Image (cartoon, rainbow, N blue to C red; front, side):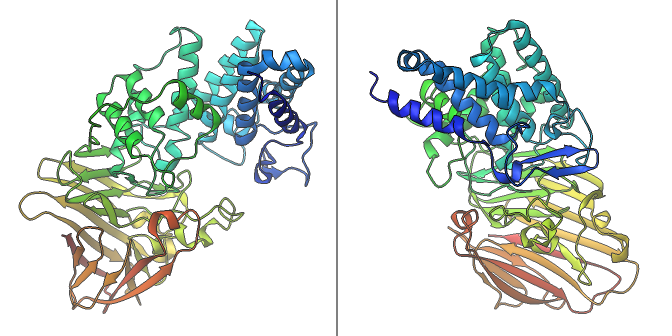
Length: 530
């Protein structure tokens, strides 16, 4: 009705007047010598194609598509300016340069396949091409280039479809892969379709394989334990690949959506929610809650006591290496849930700062192995880098149990003197369900200290020798240990952080089990149960 046209013009023009459409940390370039920060102020003659510049471009493009004709009736220079900014800031630089690190064409400071930046940015650029580009040859060339970039990203995935960046970044990795191919599918009237590709299907299924219960998910790496991946994408991804389990998960999560657990949604995702909503039948189906899974590429096992129910125990355990995207030094760590909520936890990550993605990353406590469910030997923690990894990894999944076996000695540097550290993490079902942790080690020399860390979501009562009582939302989790072997201390870790407080509240607890007479060769067994 024209009521908002003036405001839309003012908003669009103000955005077009901005020198930079991203955040200062993204004002950088990559060369063969490494990442190079841009100038203190943006260089408008050398635009940077990054996450939020691409998203801003899509906002402008959809505005052009939806109300461009109405804007032209008032002032045609507005839509001319919109197209100019999109081409100048985004489409031209994308086509003209191969050295965007996220594109994966040139190996520079960041070795290996690109991370979530690749499909995140490309999903926006593809939409720009479909909405703004009138030249068919240029559009075809851009689509071809985008597909080459997506190939680089997909080449870094194992056939299990697991996301080593964690569940939060599935929302910008697997979910953006869906958005890329959904755009191409719809724009080509089905001529470009990948939904039958096994890798694409497995990437979609990661969501329910990493699900603990309700809005709780396995959160290795920089994941947050309490979140809801975009239900609209989850549902329609399941629809595209013909996976009823994923569609059911999307329906249930849409009904479960709350402001504090809703994943950040960019503008096009709001549009999809409006125009392609998730069905909400009556009654709403329950979450599918699959029994167990083993993602052998990223080496993550998940298992629950009872399929289709949050009641009882849940286990997630990982091998992998310490050079993963959004890495934490956590080879061999695990999560134990009870009644649909994690009790022995991965703390996650605090608000991002300038240290988070710098050489000082591992000065941050959440990144360190001593704040994961792992041992520390003579004060030495696991080391960062892809070469620090699990060995002899195997998983055994049956109706009676789910078990991960691995040697995590390779996650420490040579100075730690860890020759062997065999770890078994096992969920036992049946009349006496439990999660068992069995560690057996051999060190080069007799150590001065060995300390096993356990991270708990809430308060821990250590007053009973041989048993820890970890507070749970419905029932407490009990952890049995040999009191003759360990001395126990607990630390309250205060949480005052906008990223972690909505997940854990005001505090979490760190339990330190210190071996009383640490030998060069030894073992322990812990048993967690309700």
